[in-house]
Length: 239
Image 1 (cartoon, one colour):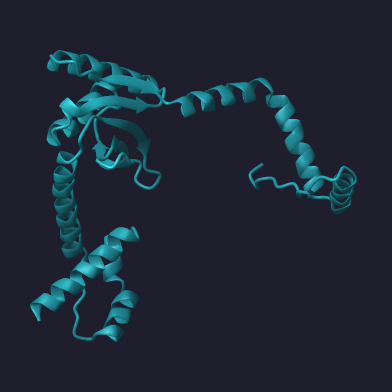
Image 2 (image 1 turned 135 degrees about the vertical axis):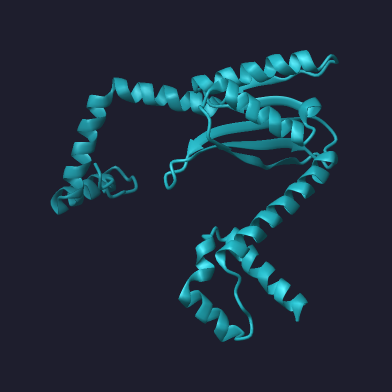
């Protein structure tokens, strides 16, 4: 029956989405054989049909997000990050929304992943984020944006702040914040560069201990004498 076919197609689509499987998995001979064992009457959709179903599911979820956003009682904040896929070398801008719901619970979810085919300038990033906020009618609710300290992101935050100040004539304000974790990370990296020679010496010593049974035994004995837990040195293979 058609209803049963649709339910099974939906089940396959949900599995592909939740398990992050490629569309081509439905064309795999072994996968088709496995499905046929469960039900020989069911014809698995091909990759093109599955792609259409995934896009349709995305559109449906996106519509539901619009309804959920209408229920947010107060202001919302955002975090944004730009990254490049190691598989396709394509760039994406991720935008996450953060807010307090009606029960005073902190909530957040990924609002959008924006494929970035233009130059990664702060102006282009700001325009991309602004388009998403306009799509979901979030401009008047926007309170703050937090990003890393990359120069383009700083331009992006400044550009959005300036535009929202001009667009909103009430007491609403929009601020850009630099991620404190990223600042600490930059500081730690700079500090490690200062003591780079000492770090290399420690790593060489760890490699030497790790590759010597006698030295590991000596280290274990020293730990026992000092009444501290013995941890066998671990060094990444590339080091």
